[in-house]
Image (tube, rainbow over all chains, first blue to last red; front, side, top):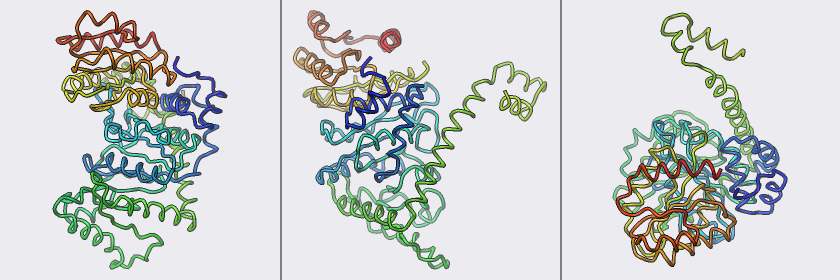
Length: 315
Length: 133
């Protein structure tokens, strides 16, 4: 095999900052290999030590290119960066084309950058069920910033907000008017809003629409929040606005640490991680025991979903 | 396939023609593999680093420029240096039959020439990878 799977050796090497060991550990954890569990237990001790930044938004908004720019910015400050980039698995073949890495190749050989592409493997919502385990590997590896880039998603995929500390919602000019920005869903979970491709026409209107929609809550009598999500314009291809974005991301981290909101979010993250764990081990396990005969029995009305469901959960 | 096998498709050197690589990426995706594509104009070190960080089961190299005798062995050297001693490396492109032996010696398990049916490549990986894992 490539690198030894011995848990003690892997843990030691990951904690020393060994990328090859981290890569192997990631495989064991995301493949839900039995050898991954002792690793996950150890790495969890490092959970919550550094800021996790989520990059979400519709497909083609420039999330990967922007991620590449953020890496460049953090590297100029000598911070070590870990990136987890999720792309969709095919519901038909189970295969996937993981294309985020291609946009970040300029950092390919930088020893201070670790990038891993992950497939969603059947999870809807822009992430994958083993995302937390993957994050803990990067925390144990000693990354100073962790960026989680989601599958390009629609309007109501908000899972990312229970996984990371700071959510960047990336959109572009011409993604719609202020009515779009008023809708519930992803718009509610952004901690920083980014209008990317700011070199395109319509940037000012897009920024204005977003700011307007975010401020509507005040008119409706909502209390002013301790953190009002700012809107920033960037052009990821040229790098314009990236330093300002990074500054806002840092400010949000400071806010989280000072306000107690950070602890609240960490608790929510752990609750979600537990939920994913139970889903993997109970739900998937139960559904894996459904036989073709069970399905036939429902068609012939010998049983029904409720009866069958109870039987599955008890056995 | 239980957990999907992961494959890195890479284009080393100064060769911007990646239609073939994209066709392979698509075929492997549809055959149930998780495929990572590096994009064009990669150095051997970039390819080896990507293979290491992605912990892939195989690396497929596509090259049409004629520099395969220089670049392919160089990539194999970098892979070994990164500790990827058993990763399966295969190649494709405009590669004369008489070069295949030299490439095999350098660590390229198999070379697929122009006109290879996609199913041949899929079958090759499905046969080879479970043994390696």
